[in-house]
Length: 490
Image (cartoon, rainbow, N blue to C red; front, side, top):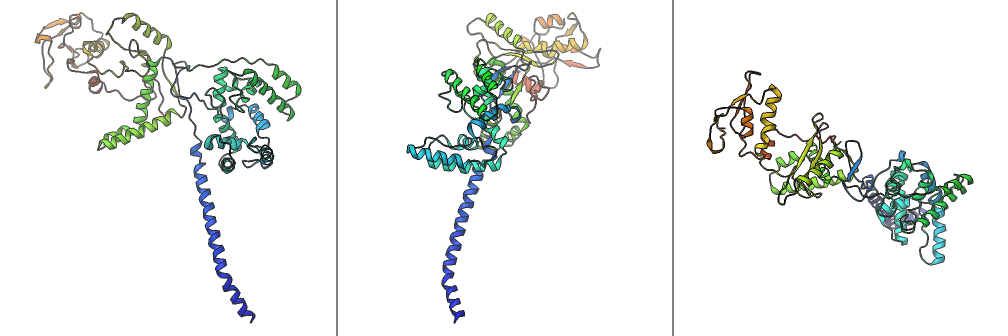
């Protein structure tokens, strides 16, 4: 009888068991799905932030910024411990112990918010603030706060405490369009972060708590009050003695606001163009374009390339160029003085003879950044001005010939190539000086007496600068030894 009753009980409970089993599995799947979505949302790929790329001259001095907003990045080892101590003491005293959120701080904040019937205090840890800035925005709702906890915990699983601190200090807002503590240091003091004294460090660390209220430009006194409050907290937590805190409060703070650096646009634009060529060549975009079989495929490659260029420029690269500021300014002044006629335009490129690097470039007499650049975008016939560079100069340099040397200026043909002079005239044997001054097209320079070679001159009447580059002297894309001095990207 007991056995029968046992079987009846088992069979009667079996449907309930199945219901519990399937319900539990369903909830587990939901949790696993949520966890998977959370891990994907808070992946390390999402931690990249926009950084400003810079152009420097031959002496390593900055002359142009490539993108906005102005944002520099400070690696963890470059961030002073004093800044970290201020943040931990004032914002999150249990930062190095919690798992992304501080339960005690949340309870205190909840009690205070219930008293005031709306959110007054968030109880956010540094990790929660990082999650908010990276993913969630500044909305003050309980739902957003709950989501913030999940994100913060996931960040703690993905990064070390030092990495969290580094990322946090590089994304927080310091007012006036300034993000990150290195950027703040250079914007407000025009010094690198490592050059600031402790009083200055405490001053800029005061800003993010309320960037509007503690804007040093508009509300310097409020920022100073907040700085002294932070120094008091450091004293209370034993990080500073009373004497040290008093001395730091007495240090005078002198702002030195930085303005955007945007000089020598003629040179900067070409350097950026060369960067595009480097990326296109080294990452295979040129080969992809050659292999593309339709306009649609080419457009897709162009779009992919534009996205890649945005990634490169927003990654905070530094392009070291060979710009000589003195020569650049003299070149620009010469154009403004000499080409002061309406309708007359020009361009120049100055190359250092020893290093073979481009040290100055003028894109036009009144060139404005990103306008048409006559120095490298204007493909026109070089005309007779190319002859000294391609014919006379190399011959004189190699043979040490005199300008009184006589050359044959009659017509000739090499295969289907038959240069002629203006009007079809032939001049016979003339001095090199005469051939050059009259700009004859047919002189032939005889190398046979000196090197065993005969190198005839070239005919330039139908030769554009673009064809000159492609047919006569192919211009390789820059490498580590390029005229601009740009190293290859890695």
